[in-house]
Structures are given as structure tokens and as C-alpha cells.
Amino acid sequence: MTLPRSHRSRGAAAPDFTDALNAFMTRPDEPETLQLLTPEGTLLASPEETPGYDPDLLRVLYRDMVMSRGFDTEATALQRQGELGLWPPLAGQEAAQVGSAHALRPDDYVFPSYREHGVAWCRGVDPVDVVKLYRGVTNGGWDPRKSNFHLYTLVVGSHTLHATGYAMSLAKKGSDAVAVAYFGDGASSEGDVAEAFTFAAVHDAPVLFFCPNNQWAISEPVTRQLRGPLYRRAHGYGFPGVRVDGNDVLAVHAVTRFALDHIRNGNGPFLVEAFTYRMGAHTTSDDPTRYRAQTELEHWRARDPIARLRVHLTEAGHAPPEFFEKVEEQARELAHRVRREVRTMPNPHRLTVFDHVYAEGHAVVDEERRQFEEYHRSFADPESE
Image (cartoon, rainbow, N blue to C red; front, side):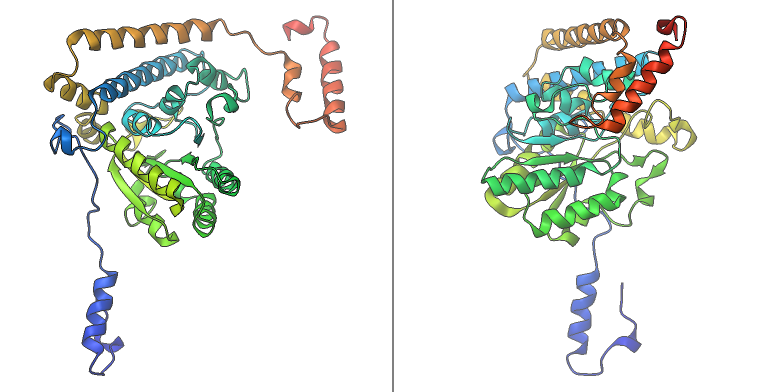
């Protein structure tokens, strides 16, 4: 951007001021994306110069990405076969989720949206409990207090406010634990996210905003969400933000650890944008072939996070063929268990819908329960209704 001449002062200092102002307003066209492992599986630096490089950790990260994809693939198939009401596929975003989740401490508290199946796996949540929500047999599925992994939030962006409030309470207690909010690029345009950024910044809340930018908010491309790089939104609120290659699990892990250390040292919030891609549909009710090109999908398939790490583990001699075979067998076993348990899940009793409307009893809900029960008793065979 260049200031028009008519807006320039005629004083002696005007050229210097104008040049400085134009330089301040100028931004690079392409943002820098932090990367440690290329799509071909090659380290950009030596292992000694690569932060967090550990063959044992890499094998764990690989296993958890494969397990997450195996579970996700099975859940997608179950929905297509009528066993689940809906499913938001994860495929393509495993590195962003698994890499960041392994950087967390057990006492950090995670606020997911509705696609964080890989984070749930790493936090110890049983995948069967995750699919219970999408089968419609529960309003939650797991106890958040056991894993410090909150229930899924289907209201887009609202949980960033929950994470900020929780983080403010952590700071008040003197804890160095961090609240972590996962939200997509589409959610970043929600007013709730803007409010969360504001509160987190002015209160120096220990919260990590982690955005897996998968390029699409259902059928809207990220270019329709904002004009500049997503991570720079943090700068406008007064806290740092970075973009990392979201398909590079090693870089995601290193950047997330850096951000968490920054927050734990009392420096307030941090935004990580994991630049990745959603391989499948937004949800199983969506048809991505209607709005995106096959060439785009092929471009990102060549950057598959699991294949990238497998190549590196193989070429670096960190994992023999037996390791990969064992991991794939474990993923198949998990998928079989999920399928078996989903198909044998008992339906909840119809009256349980009233159980958790309020934390304590409520006269209006009690009356609604009574009327509902009486209505079903009016049938000759209520169990068949």
C-alpha cells in the first residue's frame, strides 16, 4: 500500500515519515510456515539440531496417528452403514492433533470442538465413548475429569470462551497448567473467538489457542474467511501467533511445546495455526466433490502426515518392517472392537433425556417427565413405540 501524494505533508520530514508508514503497512505476501520434516520425509537439519528429535517419540507419534486414522476410517464406515447418525472425519489432520496432544501435560485441560478424535485418543478417552455421542445414546460420552479432555462442543467457537475462563481460574490459583482450545479456521471468524482472544489477552490468561487450518469451513474456503494469514490475527489482540506445517508431526510437537513453555512462564496466551488439510468431507452429510477440485486433494495426499513420518522412520533406520506391521494390526483390532461395541450398544431408556437438563431437580422438568411417561403408558405396548 502506498499513500497518495495528496495525503503527504510538505514538510521536510514528510518523505521519511511516509516511507516509514508505508513500510509499516507492508506485509509479505506469503507467511512463513515452520517445518522440520519435508513432505518427502527428510529432516531440514541434523537430528542434533532438530528440537525434540527422539526416535522413541517418533515411533509413538506414528503409532498414535495410525490408530487415530484406523478409528476414524471405521467410524466413517459405520455412519455410511447407518450405525451412526453423523461423523466428522479426521483423515489428513492426524499430525496436527497427535503432535500437539503429546506436547501437553496431564494437568493441562483440553477444550475440543467436535473433530479432535486424535487428541481424545492421546488423552486416554476410549474411542467407543466418542462414537456414543454420534450414535445418539448419550449427550456426552466420557467423564472429562478423568482425562482433562472436555466434552465435544458442537456450537462452533463457543468453547474458546470456556477455555479462556478456565485459564483465568488457573492463573488465579497459581497453577502453571494451561487450558487448550482446538478450533477450526471457520470458527476463527466467530464472534465468540474474537471475545475469547480479547479476554485472554487483557487478562494474560494461560490459554493455548490451537487452530488446525484445514482450508475449508464446510464449503467455504479459508480465503473467504480472512484476507491475511490466520495466525496473524493474534497480533491484533496483543499476543503471539505462529504458523506450523500441520502435516509435519515433529514440527507441530516442537512448536506446541514452545508455545506451552511461553504460556507457563506467565506470558499470556498464544495462537498456533497448524496449516493442514481435511482429506474427506466436513461431516458425512457433506459432499466435498461439489466445491473442491480433485487436483487439490491429490496435492495434499502427497503430503500425507502418516506417510511422511513412515518414510523418515524407515530411511533413518528407526523402525523395522515388523514395527509397521504391528501398528497396523493394532489399528485393525481397535477398528474391530469399535464396530463390535457400536453394534451392540443398548439404547438408553427414553426417560433419561430428562436426567441432566439441570444439575439439580426442577419442577418444570419433573412435570414434563411425568407427562411424557404418562403419554407412553397410554399405548397398549409402550416398549414397541
